[in-house]
Image 1 (cartoon, rainbow, N blue to C red):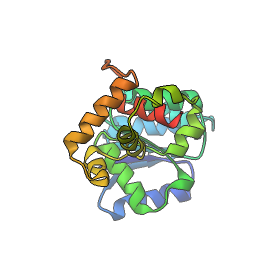
Image 2 (cartoon, rainbow, N blue to C red):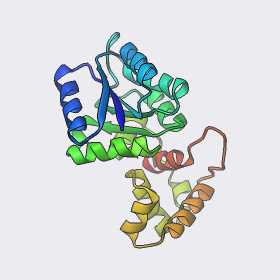
Image 3 (cartoon, rainbow, N blue to C red):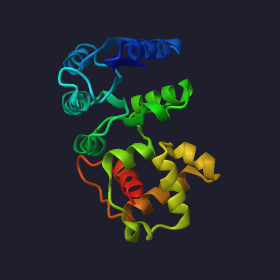
Image 4 (spheres, rainbow, N blue to C red):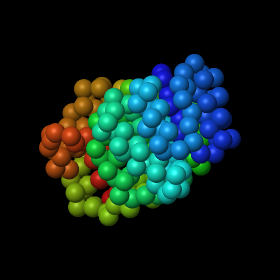
Length: 214
């Protein structure tokens, strides 16, 4: 896996480089500001770009805005936001519209190296990794119990594991059911949450957002 890192803290940036290379992945660029992130992705075409939210030049939401632009200019590159900051509108747009893998984790909730590397590998494989606390804090969705009440207990279990970033295979293992049963439950979730197939929509992400914003 080839990774670009954008982090304005030199200490954290170098720490991420060491952690990622230690497990056998390649960091092709490590930069300190949002414009450099976009240039590095254009030059190296990495599997994943890791970025903070608040970065130079403006120290506001430059990193997140750059990530959002990258989802359009380089849709094959997964985006993992690793931050502690909240920018509601851009975060929602990133999570809902990214065509490739996408992740959003809080720095202070990443428990260990294995968790971080697992998130990177899922995003590189076009998966989705969203910390439930991130969604609650960053997106501030209104509760919608009436819609979620349509789900069966099993569908709620499946959706909870989806919200934790689990793949269909991992959900099947956790619930001791077949992957076909997982797929059937996910299909039922999409139907009951009124999430029809639509170009540009990631129904798995939209279902998780509906669940975490309940």
